[in-house]
Each structure stands twice: as C-alpha cells, then as structure tokens.
Length: 251
Image (cartoon, rainbow, N blue to C red; front, side, top):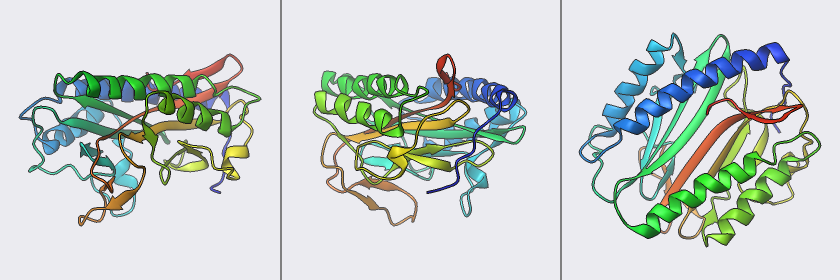
C-alpha cells in the first residue's frame, strides 16, 4: 500500500484552487472534442490551458511520460498516448484524462464523450457519470474505501456494465499517486479496509466496459485496452473528505 497523507485545511484550500483550475481546463477540452479533431489537438490545447492557469501538467512528472493528457478511443481504457494519427470519428467514444500541478499539489480528472446518436452508448456514458456520483457520495467520514468501491460495482451492475478490475483510483496530494488505492470493485484488499477520515483526498475514478473486464497492453507500451475489443469509458474527480461530506475539488 502506498503511503497515505492527510491534508490540513490550508492544504485542501490550495488543492481546491488547483481543482477549480483543472475544472476550467476540463471544460475547455470537453468542448474541443469533436469529429475530425485529433488527439494531439487536444493535447496541445491542454498544454495551453494549463499554462494559462499558471500551472504545470501533472502527467509530465510521471517517469518516461511526456504528455499532459492520456487519450483513448472506444476499446482504449487508460494511459493512451495522444497521437496525431488518432483522429476522432463519428460514433467514437473519446476518453480524456488530465492532471494539473499547482503550488506543490496535484489534481486529477477524466471524462468521456460520445460522438454519435446511438441511444445505447449515450446510456452507457450516463451510467458511468451517475455511478461515479453515487460513489463520491460515499466518501464520508466513518465509511471505508470499500463503500466507494461497492457503490461503483452496484451502479454498473444495474446498467449491465463491468468495472475494470486491474485498474484503480488513488489518493492524491503532493504526489500524483498516493495511498490508498480506490478499486472500481470489491475484492477484500487492505486498501478497501482503509477508514475515510477528514483531510484524506482521493482521485475517485470509474473505469468500466460493455464487455469483460480483461485488459491488454498496446504495442506503444502505455495504452491499456479491453482484451475483447468492447467499448470502455471513464470518469474521475478529485474529492476531499471533509466534516461536511465529500467536496469535489475538480467540479
């Protein structure tokens, strides 16, 4: 288990400021995702918007990764390198993960967009967003990480979708990835038994698929995609545990 770091109220205020900056970046990126746009267009825009927020990209601080975003389409789940040859087409599901570093703290958020009119895929994305909201509602003092994970499992099951079992959300703060891990399913791990306390900040992320939860690594050494080629999506927010309940920093 990675080290768990509890934040002071002053540190959470800084992280909230960082989260608001990242929220503005996210909104700008989401508006730009469209048919005919390339992944590198979104990457370039992310770099520009983060710089305009007097901040730095979080992901470029990850060893051997040099981009501000991770971008995936359709069966791509996470960690996709934003390539110029990845051009968004009609009926694509485009997922964008982006992080921002400000005054010594990271914030992290993800979203998925469907570029089409299929009601089933629109419902698939609505399911993920609403299930993440249900999971965030469990991020309260006295609960455990397991309560967050169980909310994701239960919500996805209702929509006949499956969580990706080998990927997790995480604690976040001065490091992009801190403890505890926040799985999208319940396995009985030590991280799931962690008690939620005031000052804990989590990047709660739902990663899910229409098919089976198995994933494979692409030849680029980064992109993780569903093994069966089924559509996947993800949504993520950075959330602080406070005395007043969950505070979404990146909304």
